[in-house]
Amino acid sequence: MTPPSHFAGLADAGLNLQALFNLRDLPVTLQSQLAEDAADWSQLLLLGHAGPTLWHQLTDAGAVSGDAVARADPIDDYSRAQVARLFNDELAGHRYRIIYPGSERVALQQLGALAGWHHSSPFRVGISERWGSWFAYRAVVLTDTGLHPFSTPVGGSPCSRCVERPCITSCSGQVLDRPDATAACIRFRLEHNSPCAGHCAARWACPVAVEERYSAEQFHYHYRRSLQTLRCWAVQADSIRK
Picture 1 (tube, rainbow, N blue to C red):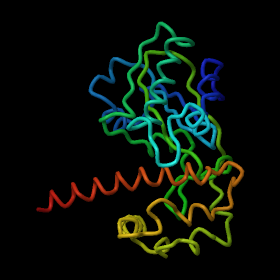
Picture 2 (picture 1 turned 120 degrees about the horizontal axis):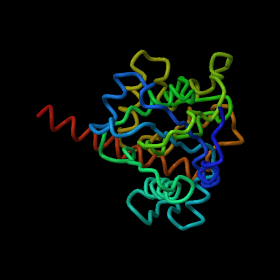
Picture 3 (picture 1 turned 180 degrees about the vertical axis):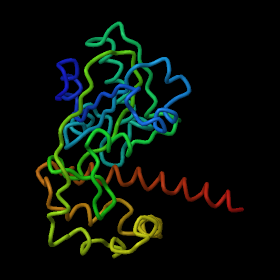
């Protein structure tokens, strides 16, 4: 089922991947991970962006520009603001609580799989026929709404029909056909002067939905941010080992 009209403003703002679940219908293990007060809520709203629209909104507002960042987490700030606008306007009178972005651990990949958005790819980024790999999760919201559950259709995985698999041959670290591909990819990205610090040649080489591909500026921005996260994780891991 496609989203009701309440959510059209979110799509226009670039949050064009949307899914609404009844909390009671989610797997028990996932319910227990969401929040201590999940019993106070009835539904979960999952939001993502696909394609370049969200980035255009941010750049037009001057929130991001190349390496310059007007705020610490401009995309998170923007996503929170759009959720607040939704509940102030179209869903006025309903309560909500944003649990992502935030400090709580949220199983985004599991929620994305339940929404039908997440299909595996050789380069370890979700992919679909409609958007290729050019999407990301932006918000998870607990609500007291009673709307009919829905999810934005994105199509199946195109990888099973891909014969040439240019992502594997284009990988700068030549790690995607290894059994420890994910760990090897992270190690290679963390190397000094790694070519994958702000770019992923494998993902860029994917021929699916190239018309929805991020601009080079947006692509590099996301990869620089993810590299910062990987470096923080590496420091924490070293501290634990010591």
